[in-house]
Amino acid sequence: MKQDEVMQRLLTFFREEWQAGDVSAETELLRELITDSLRLVTLALFMEQSFGVRFAPTDMNPDLFHSPASLARFIVEKSP
Image: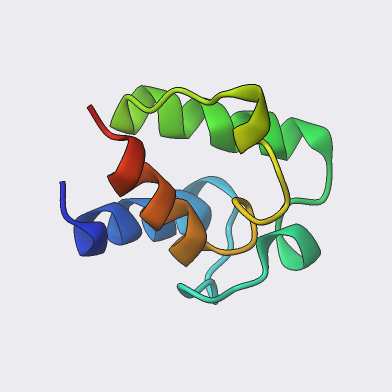
């Protein structure tokens, strides 16, 4: 899957599931949208179910969840 396709699916998720209408590729997720651990888990499950990626314990770090762009790069790299 191409990174731009992944990005669109992520942005749609944020807009529809979290009502984040002004989200962009560079939105700082940990500061603006991921306000608690439940949201982090919900996002991780969405990524696993939608893109088939699996997280190693070392993947769960602030750099990965910095922005939709960092998530899209991770997904493209880890996609089966």
